[in-house]
Amino acid sequence: MRVLTVVGARPQFVKAAPVSRALRADHDEILVHTGQHYDDAMSAAFFRDFEMPEPDVNLEVGSGSHGAMTGEMLRRLEPVVLAHEPDGVLVYGDTNSTLAAAVVASKIAYDGGRRPWLAHVEAGLRSFNRRMPEERNRIVADHLSDMCLAPTAAAMANLAREGLDERALLVGDVMVDAHAWAVERAGAHLPAVAREHDRYVLLTMHRAENVDDPSRFAPILDGLSLDLPVIFPVHPRTRAALERGSHGLPDNIIPIAPVGYLEMVALESRAYAIATDSGGVQKEAYLSGVPCITLRSETEWVETVEAGWNRVVDADPTAVAATLADEAFMNRDRPRPALYGDAHAAARIVAALESHHARVTEARSPQKETAQ
Image (tube, rainbow, N blue to C red; front, side, top):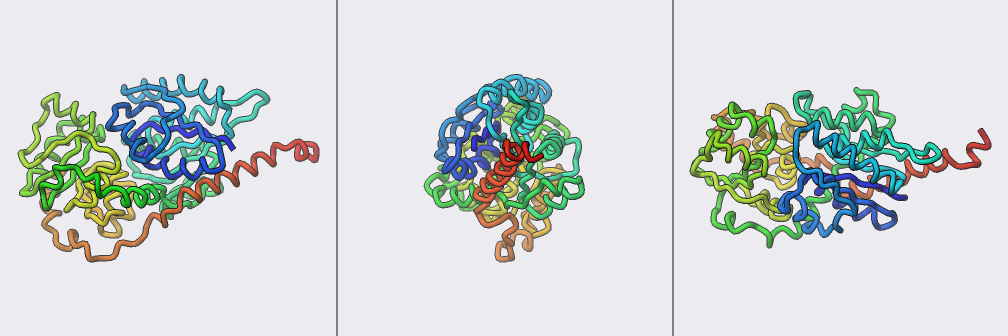
């Protein structure tokens, strides 16, 4: 089986790593990097951290508007798929890279009319906020996919509501696989700045609706003016917003360069609390057993909220301090159910791909066509 995997952003590198290891044990994988995240700290460092091979193809699309970026990915990805003729295309999450790969895979056909199947890992997630580009991307990817590989029962229910239950399969969450692998290796990678503080809040913020909107960005930053140090790996988008001078950082926030995955897991594991607008970091906080404060108006990871480990506070400038003062929320001696699986999602995903490919191959066989 030959599978073409498309990734483009940090969360996708994290998710793809355990699946790539499992897939390459018995099958061929062509790894395509769109170049959506392209600097070393947001891209190459993650491949090194996960001991993954360099991508077979880098489209080097870079940044831009949503339309321009997605269009350029479509243009550059289609000839790559035609050149390699994979049996299937595998996509992850909800980025522009996911959308572009899903569209290419769903439209392309090889000589003789054969087309690749399309599988979407992390299918069925919904924030129910259509203003988010990520929400639109994930919905389109699910509806174009032949296989919707869901991480949770809630995601399966979302797919069923949209009439996609026949192509949906609950496999668990590959981020659990990745996190378990990283925890064993992360201890030696804790950045020096974290070693200087017994207690700190870890902050990540990168979503356009937060950092590109001064009416949201300013109150969020004001709300992080705390009596605790706040360690802040600054995403390139956020750095650009800060350089535009729309708002300065409070004195207690310590900005640092973006970090690799092992450093990030180490920072998360040692944090007193995590404040973030990242979907992936919310889940990593839960896996690390660290209370999470989500700087958005909603979350696709509703299970973490229901379990009491995540609180959605939007841009309320008083909410972070109030949450940190909530002893019940900050108490770590409470149940933390295994919401996302058992760290064997990658093996289930590969088994699902194998099973689907076998069915497709059987349906195309000459004997089958003759019998019909």
